[in-house]
Length: 301
View (cartoon, rainbow, N blue to C red):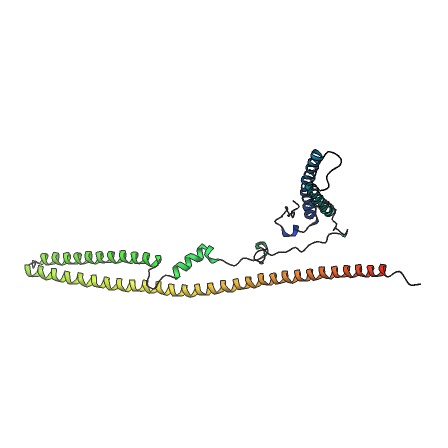
């Protein structure tokens, strides 16, 4: 019945955990729970006494009745609760059981389970996975060699369109030149089958040469685009490596900062515990000295 009373008020702010107001509020709840326990015990005692009276009458009561031992045990529990209730009421006044003021407890900034600093008191490490721009940059520069970038694909589409236009222009230019040559021969009356065949052959030869020239230019242009793309990838990969090294250095600095604060927290707590121990030893020594003085006051005749 007289179980341990657990703290009910648990503020999120750790600096409020040991405030006197919290101690008083907890003491009020503790007193209420203890009174409820004592009320239940007193009811059991009254019920047992009622059983004795009903069985044996008012007088005399059989001293060997089993109810008597139960009543004695319950009365001892009730008496124990009286002391705890008194202590709870002293806490409500800000006093310890011995009447001294309640000393403030240590306010810890660490998590009870992990022993690490609470999140609100430490710096968070840089997390590049949350940076959209960085992830896009990483994706762009971590692609396999020879894999075309979006820029390269657009440039190749543009080059292909330009090459096709150049081929069309060369064809039109060749056909126009052939038409002009045939017109001149006709005007001079020399347009025969041999001349016509020769003109057609020359036109095909010139058109083929122009198309080959356009293709060579296209090959050179595509090679230049791919070369520029690979150079950009390698340069970006080098920059990305530098960025990741900088992020790693920064996170290491953050870890060292948090670790330094955690060590300060531990050192402060040890110093506080040592101070509490020293004060208790002083009080103990003073009490022993007082007892010795009062006990040795009587002298011989």
